Length: 367
Image 1 (cartoon, helix red, strand yellow):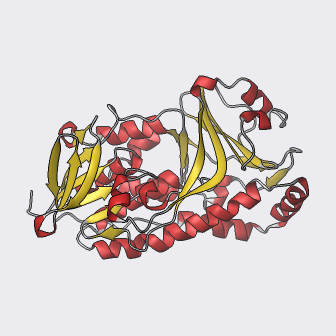
Image 2 (image 1 turned 90 degrees about the vertical axis):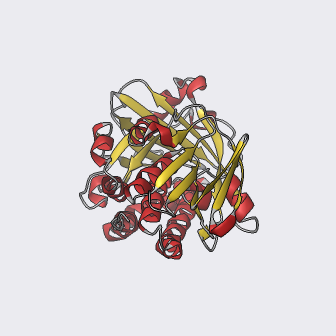
Image 3 (image 1 turned 180 degrees about the vertical axis):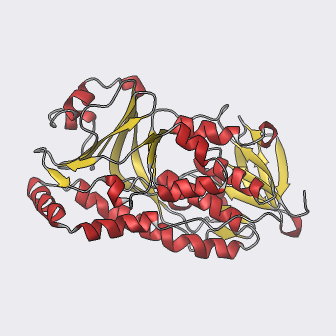
């Protein structure tokens, strides 16, 4: 391995594992530190738009991802009266290009299989990071200190790395939005897509292997899924049959993105850099984009910030404002929303999706 090409990655989620594959393609040696005893994510799923799939293709795992995914293009958006608010198919809004749904555990499995086992350190808690001699970085674990030429912070919204290296930035902000997510071992109902209601939203997505992903979000003051119990079918039935043991419930958090995504030889990616509301479904996609872009700019870390910060800020802003559209606070506001969305020309909807889909990765060069 050439001198100066050794990276330590803190966090073995989607962003961290993607970064490991991408950096290895760039010719770097990598070590991934994951606190959990195994690489797994359960109870949730993601939609991967063409931008994310293009990044996964760049690092050679796109075909494997598609093999475990389900093509998705027909989702609708309805209101509580069952009226369609958006008439264009989601595949059309994505420019006719492919997008897929995939269980997070399946996505993680593909990424882990693309990394040599000796590069992965599970059950290892990173307690600190620091700057060593000659511009190197240090990762401190419970029983060891290791030095790397690059440290990648992929350890999520409560990132230990960000808190230590960016103590004056990257503030965690509560959104007041509660979220519930779960997987159903059975085919989806006749309706798939989203229901935009009052103070909440509900989504239903088909998954491979005859499974279904259900998710709900609600404004502050809504404490449980009972809020959705009287929503129109199939929402009320899915809520009534939900297994409490399989539901992941939490409050959504945001990160105020730091001005620079790198300090010295430490780089932020994914939720550690820009956690956001999930209304555009881009959390995993942006982490994948970050990881592949970091590998392309690994010898120009200032270029990494320039390539990423404006994009993630735009998507954060759109996601934040989507809350007022998706889950208005009152019935009159919901009525106004319904009229406005139904009258919105397709060109505007296409422009929003264009922000998502126009991105393509810079090719990774091996040195």
